[in-house]
Length: 229
Length: 251
Image (tube, rainbow over all chains, first blue to last red):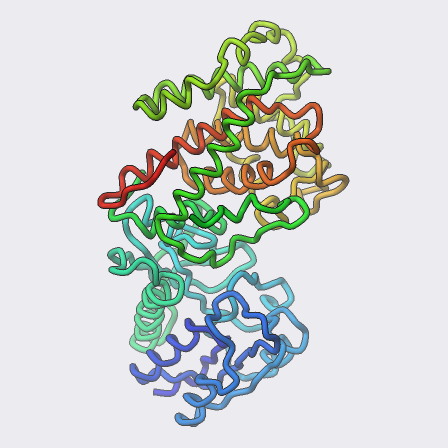
């Protein structure tokens, strides 16, 4: 099924690739993809390598999904905002590079950005929250929201908790994305089924906002085999 | 064993963003312990200097007393006691009692308004005073969360912040402010066991340890900072001991 009103903002990252592959597998094809490529040699957050022969482009070509490429990786850049604004799709699945917050200008461009947060909301807002939740609850999570100006605070479409991964060393590039993609698929399937975006929790307030976990705690979270607190 | 990289170079001049830090196995935890114990042993043997302002006694004596109570309550195995035994507690606590009338100089935390320009030193003293008197944690959390957000974004603590804490202004290298922030965070972690505060504390202590001792301001309370390191490293040790089938080298 081609999701006519839904586009995707993708980056050259393991997460975007996983999103696309799973969307293809479930036949939930975005109508359009804007791919932000990293023009520099230095890797951006979320990248394990910078591809010259881009795998995402091959996927899009094979499936005849309309796409554009931006060699400016900054989602908040005017050029990128302009490309998104002129598109007819109203909703964009957001999968940009890590560590970048969407500024007011793009949030006010008339589109809505469907974001799958790597953490169980509202309890775990912010960054690297699955490491924190492994230490506290021995679980990881993912939650679907539309981005708003306040970080991870939009109404919650769906949220799920998952068992701790078998190999915790692969959280950053595998298990965190896997949890997110499961929630993304379920969220889109719900939308197709009901024809509207239904919120499981309108009131996404409270909880704790976390920041990038310190490497010592990250190591304890990976080495751990149960809650530590 | 690989060196603990986060204190290796001056993190005031070269901040670390901690993003996607690589996994290095249990050896990384061992290198952290080794590094922190080195700094702890160095700082704890210093004699506190005489401080210029009476207000400092509040922070040092009541803060020290609070941390001692936490250390005594939470950590008591042979290794813990051997580290605690290195502290000259009489020296640390001898100024207790001096300070009962100095709190008048500290503003009431609830009187601060985020819409105003906030002097960081004033805010940190107000937070510490509220914490050490065992008062409302909610208002402490409110202000600490704001400071944490600014620090995590910029990796700096500025002398003052503009209206709504939007932007830091003035000097960003007053190391005593970083120390005071680390004391606030350690006390808040002791009270709540919320690892969010431990995570930021680890970054602040990385930064302070990374600065050459001889360049630290003469008002920098080395011994009290040593105690903060002790609280932090024994907490990490305690958390790591809950991990089965991994043997860490604490010493």
